[in-house]
Amino acid sequence: MKHLIANWKMNFINSDAWLKDFDLNNIPKEIKVVICPNYLEIEDFYEISSKTHEKILIGAQNLSSETKGAFTGQISGKMLKNIGASYSIVGHSECRLQGEDDETILNKVQTAIECELIPILCIGENQEEYSKGRTEKKIKHQLTENLFPLKNLSKSVLIAYEPIYAIGSGIAVQNEHLEEVSLLIKDLVRDNLGIDLTLIYGGSVTSDSAKNLAKIDGIDGFLVGNASLDPKEFANIALSLE
Ligand code: PEP
Image (cartoon, rainbow, N blue to C red; front, side, top):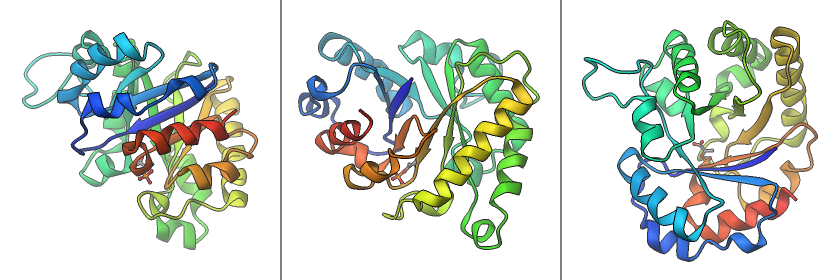
C-alpha cells in the first residue's frame, strides 16, 4: 500500500486553511494520506478533516514508550488513539538527536503497536557515515536494535528511510543510493522477520524530486516535511506515486 505522509513538525499551520487548499480529488484512491500535526492540533485536525476529507488519516510525531502512569510531560499512544491518531512516527532523527536511544525507540515501536497505532520507524545514516561507506552498517544496526527483537510483527509497521543529510537540505538522495538501500532494508526485514514491510523515503521530497524517486522499485511512498506545509505542493507529490 502506498503512503504519502506529512510531518508538520513544530510549525504553525492553520488546519482550516490548509484543508481548504488540499484537493483530494486528484489523489489516487489507493494512496493512504497521513498528516502528522503537533500533539495539540491532532484532535482539531481530526474533527475538521473527518467532515471534509474523510480519506485523510492522522499520525502523531512521537509517543511515549510507556502506556500510562507517572511520566511527566509524556503523551501515551492510547491518548493519541483516543483523539483520532492511527499512526505515529517513531525514532525521527530530530528526536534521536535530542537523546532518544535505541532501546527507547524499540519500546516505542512496541508500545505503538499495543496502542493500535501504526509505527512509522525512521532510520538512516548521517553525512559522516555516508561519506565513510558506513550506510549498510548503520541500517543493520538500527533495524537490529529498533525492530528485529519484536517477533510476530504484522505488516502494519512502516519503515521510513531518511538519510539525515537529506532532511531539510533541499537535496534528496541520489536514486542509485536509494535503490541500493531500499533493497538492503527489504532483504534484511525479510530475512529477520519473514515478512515484507512498506518502505517509504523521506528527505527533501518535493513535487519535482518525487518524480524521479518514485521510479524506484521498493519505495512505496514518501515522508514529507517542508513540502507538506504547502497543501498544493503536497497534493502534487501524490501524483508521482500513481
Ligand atoms: C522529515 O523531517 O521527516 C523530512 C522528510 O523533512 P524534509 O522533507 O523537510 O526534508
